[in-house]
Image (cartoon, rainbow, N blue to C red; front, side, top):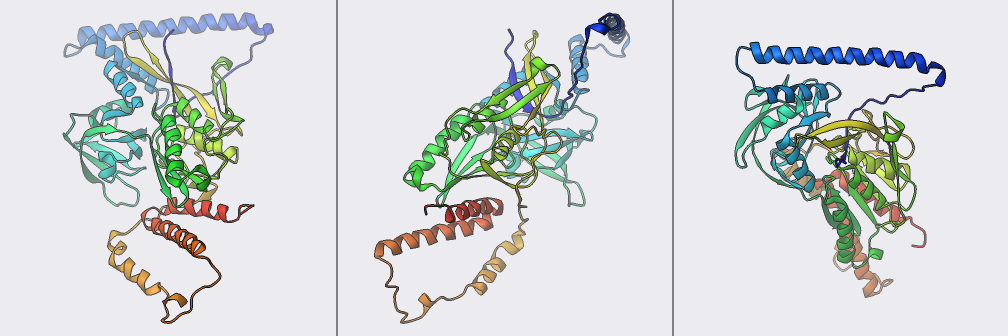
Length: 449
């Protein structure tokens, strides 16, 4: 049996029918007619193929012709079904392992142009300022309109260290502009962890083979750094600009924070193609509150995790509406050592929502402010200094507070330091700071405090 890899992807067609014994005879006749029509079309294809080989102005490669025909058949279904030759198949397999060459952007196709789903953290595209929602109209001066998604992506590939110039159209910018990027080896660290005060932050950049182990390891490291899990007041799961990846990893990551209940269901054309995944006992976060951060670059597997935690009321979702990739693709190896990437099902969140083309709506919408670098420096510092107020403690000769022990005063100072750290975070990342503030607020009103 051929090995199949399930990938959370985009688009798809859901169809079905009910057949009863009363109409079995007519249906058999209809099937025979349809089969005859299919054979006629295949004869037509063979005739055209032979005429091209015999009469085209230049000699053609028969293998390339057939592959182009196969790819054309698949891409006519939706933007994410396609044929992968041996090299493309190897590239995709390598990418799911977390290391590959390129620019570091996840793209889709819209209106004939290449649309950036999200730049990947720490990649050349990220460093060059490419943003989610950007349209790429040209690659090295050559228009991409009319090319398939795979053809356009192929043009963006190249030797490590080589330069590529892409032309970008961005909402809010009047004219297209060129961006020069140096290709590099993309090494994705699927999960990064950090402590902000008593809040653990898990930044998940992609869903590959490293993701669930990275989540598990990240939580352990955060607990050690905090001095024990009991010292952590909650977790932020940052899925912003995470384009998705392997469906299995999305299920494992969701299960990491759920004890029971459905995680996701997939429904294909036939009943046999449908499945339901349920959580198993065990919550790595030990029931502590969670905030999930998403934006327009959060797609596919990211939306599965977000939808599962939101529907189970396990997390508060903060940010902006996600991308809306709501279907599953199956990667099917073929005899010629290539593969077929085929959209086979839609996925649904535990409440039965299909996210396809709609996305996940946050519980609390928080936009990321656009920072003007010209204002960010000296003017912002001057404004901060102007609004800073003196306190009683600043006055010369002020009497001391006698209601607290030295240990209590130290604890208070530590808490103030954590609060100031969270406040500074607003300048660096407003959405993340907002998520941290929510968890701090929940902890402040928690019972038994």
